[in-house]
Image (cartoon, rainbow, N blue to C red; front, side, top):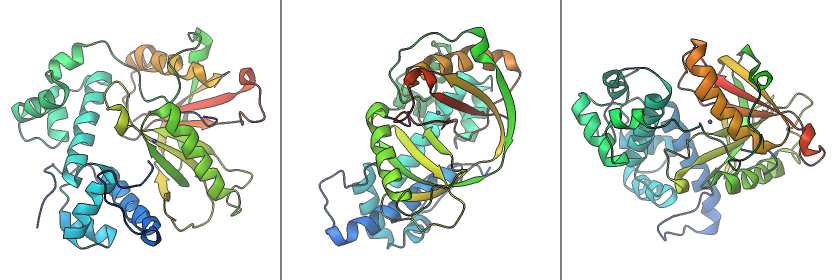
Length: 313
């Protein structure tokens, strides 16, 4: 069995990048593109869900319903990385976020990233970030994922008021864009709304949720992942770039931004830089997300309401 990685078992804008098309010049026939998009998307979700497991190329090919030979070539063409490179990058970038936002020892982070020794982790980390894990941890902490310009008023003490909420798992339809958040978010929302509304999938209780999976201070701009999600109450079959995934349930600290989306970055900075270190809470590995309570198409910017969900243990 061919292994793609070795591991121990085990954070926009609703109003505002992954266009699933080949990145290396390969061009499937138009009739097959949507089918290939859906299959590659299925593998990306599988890798995301099983990031800490040792996955085989043959197993991933079965998820995509391709032969291993063709799957490897198609995945690389569509994603711009081999499956192994993609998994290793996600692990090392997640490790970087943990170095910034937790007090976990480097040894623990190294083992959970799939490295058998701290020295192997340090070599890989230095190769990716050009500094050691310890040196990286000492740097000024960046904010978490946010898909808006870094502007807006600084949060006041009352803006840090929050509640702890236990959420169930929720099924969503979504469209992913890979690239700059400020460009990708708007494209993703246009695509997912164009799919969901005509099909009657948007019920009265539907939630509009944005997930910025990557920290722009850690992940290269052309690899930032943003998912525009709408919760659904019935089974939906993925179609092309429109996928279906389950958002993790569990405990969340929930903060509310009152006003334009330009205030998101400052609030995230305050949550991660001020609230989290003094809260006694520990982050889970699930992504933070934003829930948009009203529409920028019908609401003045000063009246917009956005909830930020921070996953905690």
